[in-house]
Image (tube, rainbow, N blue to C red; front, side):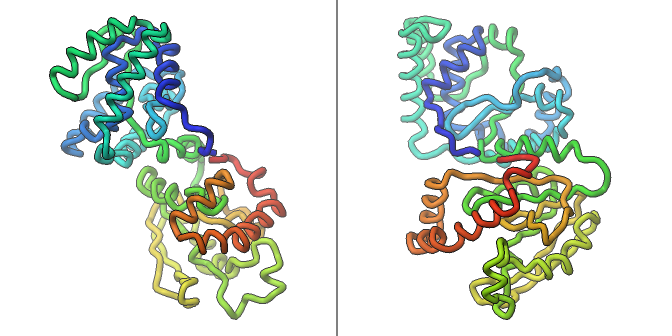
Length: 354
């Protein structure tokens, strides 16, 4: 679950110093720049970015390092050697990197300068492997040339052999699931992505479509139509999903690699509204609450559960849909979901919790 407290930049800098004793002022500046600006400056042309990445991937040595390392509360470095050691497809990491690109946020320069000040304070306090004076001299010379990206120092490159890409943590959240997906054998590669509302299931499914080329099925398209909404049906855990139609329109075609389509039920109009196309792919992702309901059987090769802190959940719903919707979710939809999760131990039975 990603709702743990985000580390402050001071903690991140100190953590890098502990893990990488070859860290020099230049490397601290590079880290601060990446944390403030991200990595969009690295890509002027996608074809060139692809060629450069593949060249670096081929030359990188596999190593038993963690897949990711903190850069900021929103970003991390994905280690190419660690990715390679796990035999994950290089194309997946490249796509994750390209998905993570975005323009620098407003106020990036001010944020960057603040990070430099934090680095100097840490160095003054002895928490970094160089003095505050050393850092100050380097930072002053650097800023005289304007704010810009820098390379790692020669000493750091020799000792650490850095090879990584900057990845948004929203995307890196999928790394454990991608590892399990890559290990699947045979033709049946359906992933059920269940979990709490406003936990990011739809966003993760969209990212999986880009990274792994997965065809996506949305459980929201299987809202129960009015004629089936009996008191008895709605009282049952997960009873507000149209499992019968899912079995008829999706289940028999889910584990083929061919494209198919199914009908969309629009809960706003309480009627069917066109077709949803599911892309041809060896991977299928069924996302949404109730996708692991026993009524659908064991169609999935992997079960994933997307979690979220209750306070963050309501805050996201309020931000997305408004205060009235948040109250409705709190009073109606969330209790229905929680009853379903508890009745069938959905989280406990998941292969991966995100």
